[in-house]
Amino acid sequence: MLVHVLLYEAGTESEGIHSLELKGTTVILMFADKDDAERYCGLLEAQDFPTPSVEALSRLDIENFCVEAGYEARYVEKGFIPSTDEERLMISPPLSNLEVGNWHNQDSIKDKISSNDQLEDIKKRLENLL
Image: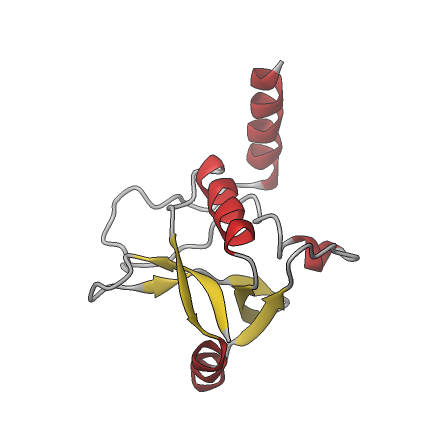
């Protein structure tokens, strides 16, 4: 069975997979529906995250990768409706990105910002929508 995952720099030596940090666990999302995965990419881009590409890979391969790496694989069904705050992250990315070190060799990786700065940023974005 194929699933859709989000990869950065797919097919290159510095390829990386999009992950979330939930309660100290690294989670890899596996989307059943390509449109859902592409929508998630659009949300990432809108929040100034690096934009990944959507790649179809074997679910078994991703699950094996996660086991070897100590990650958790989570399957996102088509039409998934979250029932908890944690599950909402499976259809909408968090507001900030974690430091990824030298993975992307960019000087533009965002520093962690305080929650007040995050609130100010959200407020400005909402005001710009009006």
